[in-house]
Length: 492
Ligand code: GLN
Image (cartoon, rainbow, N blue to C red; front, side, top):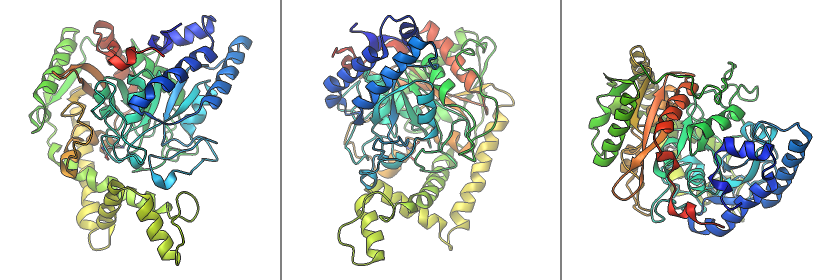
């Protein structure tokens, strides 16, 4: 079969269980596509054919023996921020270029237990800091829809791999939009779960109170399958929540769009820098949801102007603390011929970290330093609480909140936005992380350059099933999620 990569996850699982094809065939199909096409996209940092084929054979044996896991034999790509035992895990950084993890992240372990086959590790902004994937030490990943454009970030490799059909599903992480924004730029569906729903154990930390892993795929249905595997409490992550996990697949039709109250924040559609076509496509998608029976309700999120400054204090502050562990002593990059311990620390970190990471460590350290702690960090934490309250108040009168995922479509590679311009691009995604809420991106059309546009739906805590269900129903009556970039049409 030459078109195995066109199947949905449900169809792949059925095909494997009814022996229409084996996991080895399916896995080899993706490995062949990666070998042929990824030189143009550069989504993978590491491809692991031997691991993948061994896992595929194990899955085939399990399927034959009748004891297969939920997704036995289905390939996926992991963002290179998840530790993978025996496979290089870099977080897109030179400082971890030689790091082979001695253990699996919980998300990876759960994937293995469910029978998923790891094709490899995909590119990302260094330590997940960025919105373009250009800050990776391994070079820029290309957007499959336009190879001179970025795929977004930080989970840009995950998005590009799925959009080019170099993996059917991928894991991503979202600290301030890193699942939703690349999903938007690459025409995919991506879910950022409620903080605490997916274990952070073995997921290299950027900003621990904001980081959350989640699925990236073509459709809400495909995302639901991966969520069924990765969600759940983990004793190894003290912030993961011990709460029953939904069956996201079974719940796909569980929410009625008829009567659904969708909040439209009046501040969000007047943001300077919101592209007119993005606005138009998002409004069209809302019109469609209205036709399906939803009601649009204007809401007030008065803290909107505070999102970017608040996030860009808290995230770097936590990063400066988390990244202290990369000191050239225990693991990772070490400078050559240090003259003393201070020199070893200084040079290992200056040579090992890229510019964006160093900039954020400096900002974060400043915000946490004794003289400025109250003025910056403590104040940002207070504002964070107000942002959360703003959302909770809104959810008293609406079921979900709609927004663009990003104010623009994908940027040109090398556009070299100033830090402030770049950070303003996160306006629609970061408040969700500050509040710990779940949110989803769904593709809803294209701009005049044929670049994908995404709609974001933000839910109340633990409403992942509802978000997936609403998008699933939208995807039953629209076909944006089925559109493929030209490069994905190429056969291996
Ligand atoms: N673009 C945001 C940042 O650079 C978000 C990144 C993320 O979610 N990891 O911090």
